[in-house]
Image 1 (tube, rainbow, N blue to C red):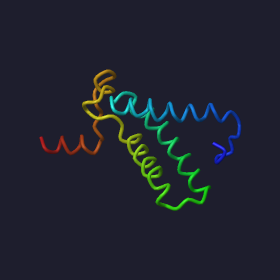
Image 2 (tube, helix red, strand yellow):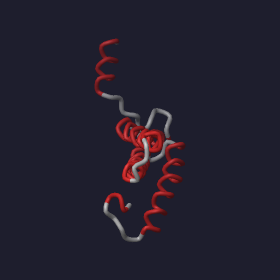
Image 3 (spheres, helix red, strand yellow):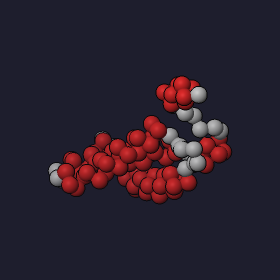
Image 4 (spheres, rainbow, N blue to C red):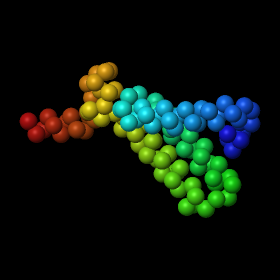
Length: 107
């Protein structure tokens, strides 16, 4: 976290990163709280990418963290799928407006 200017309680931030990666990965696998888990995982990967860049590492060293951050950002925008626990527990899966219009035109 020193990369982004936060220099206090490093053990806490390390624990939060570990919790984000373990808990967020588990939640994504279950399809539960998909957007929240994706947000925290994306933030963890952004910090990892910034740390590698500030250390002067080559692209090959930080590309995985950057790729994961982009993936989690995509999941944040897309949201849970039809068969996720989010959909089963919290309601009907919303179709994008363009898909709804296309479905109505096909009927």
